[in-house]
Structures are given as structure tokens and as C-alpha cells.
Image (tube, rainbow, N blue to C red; front, side, top):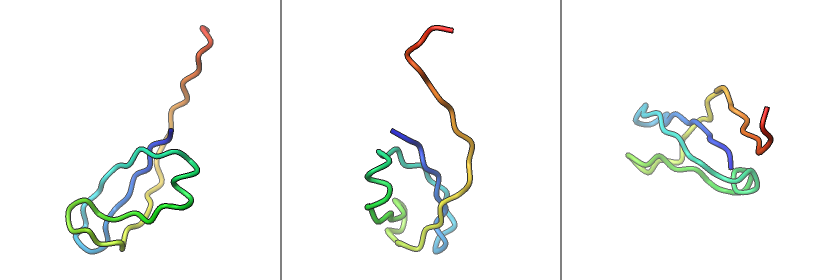
Length: 54
């Protein structure tokens, strides 16, 4: 699962979605506040978590 950050161009609200990578490619994203589909994905950092002990 990955975390994606978006910003709605209609109401200017930023929000985060957690999706599988396969869902991200197929899903239409809508703003949770105003339900607009005019959203833009933001560039953000990421974190990797493994099951191995360092």
C-alpha cells in the first residue's frame, strides 16, 4: 500500500489517500470535502518499511 497526497483545485483542500499501486492507476480520485474530481497529485516523500531486521 502506498500513501498519495492530493490537492483539490476547486476548494484548495489537501488530502491523503492510502491505496494499492494497482488501484492508484485505475481509480478516479475525488475530493472528500467538495466531491470535485479536479484534483492534482502532489509530490511527496516516501518511507520504506521492510520485514528484515537491520
